[in-house]
Length: 608
Picture 1: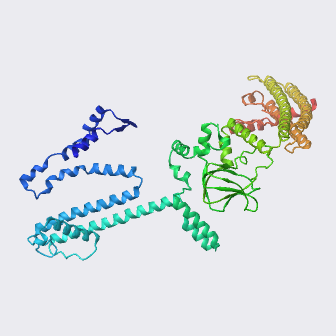
Picture 2: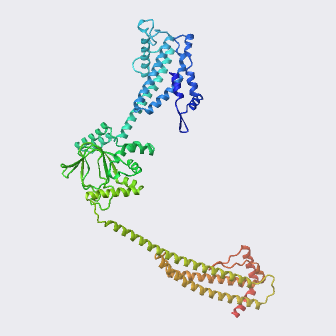
Picture 3: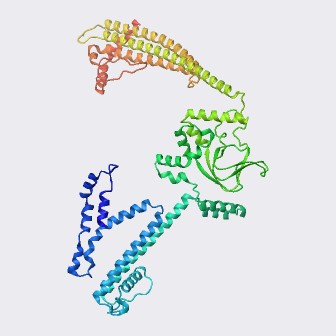
């Protein structure tokens, strides 16, 4: 048997990077260069010949056969994954392990009794010279019973008296604790897995019963619920198919759903001749439902949110009195398909037109309107095809209004929206053009202002006294200072005129901006005037400061040439000194020429 197993192993394929290798040459090479071959070869060595040396009572010479235990474990694992009853297989495997353990322990007990001496005390095996205990069958059964009694800790075993007996009992009791824990744990896992399976396949009946008792539900309703649960368990009806298959990849779930539900879905009239990909998407959305005898699936006048396909059972189309039956629906029939399509002109307005009641226990599949809408959003052509089929069915039934007034109204709404969007777009374009014009105008004014300031700065530099000129007369200085003061006054007047023009322009711009935005930031014309006046006052103060500095330069003469004089950067900009040392030297020089400054000021006043 070991040789046969090796031959089978050589011809067994293996996976390499996900590909199953079946070539015999590669299989032989893979097996001969593996550790499994060495282990199998050692287990085949004919160690039985040592019986001629040590005698037939020495079974340890065949211990090399235990090297095949990994092969047994591999076989058991594969059987567990392939069997349809894995829990039963686990219990059986556990019992086999326990049986083997008790068998080995019985053999050790018999060997220890032989070592101590048969019949030497009550604990060891009785004397084999006694014909009652001499047969091999009696020896095995007695030792097996004694070993099982120790492991299960059931019954009274003789007390050990020798040290060897006590050590054996200690080892067995420790093993018994582990065995007992293993048995309890494995059995508990099997029971819990069975319970989990029932909870996944079927709703939890115990919780429902507790809820019904706590709310004092009528006995009749509780009986109906119990019958419903009993029907599910007896007929193995699965209510949670999607949850059970959730762990599988999407393509496998689709294949399972197609093989189970596609023949049923193909019977529906509106889904015939549809794309296969659409049907594959829809079969994943089907939800199983079970109805009890006498239960209404839908009533006349209810809003339809799903359609139904009968898998098994019979349903009756009844009148409002619930007695008169118009028709009986059986396996493969369907209803409610028109209500989930939202066809325009449907006189029923997506409401149920009949009462449908279950005669016995009926198994149905439901497809909700939301699921169908989600799937059809990816298949616009199929959506149009289904709506056309549904419209034809309504025409045959005389339930479709052919006035066609709904579509023109919808078209009018769309045209009105388009016109409003076009008008808003034109207004936004006009506002954008005005803003661009204002931006260009502001840029031109800013550029003109910068050029004017550069020209003024260049003029001031040319009018300053040059380095190395000394001995200027007081009249000359007076004329120079007077000329500068007159030029500054003219410049101030020009800036005031420009400020007034800027004021008018700003007011005009404010009005334009109010016309464009119609939702301004709340600034009024009064605030605009105050801003312009503050700007003009800043310009005047800057000019005044500049005039005072030029007077000081006139008093200092050629020594003031070393000071860094920088023109203002904008309206109201102040001239900053380079550092504190220049300020101190300026104060010291101004004190020395204070007397000359007073005379020059008097002369300047006379000229002005």
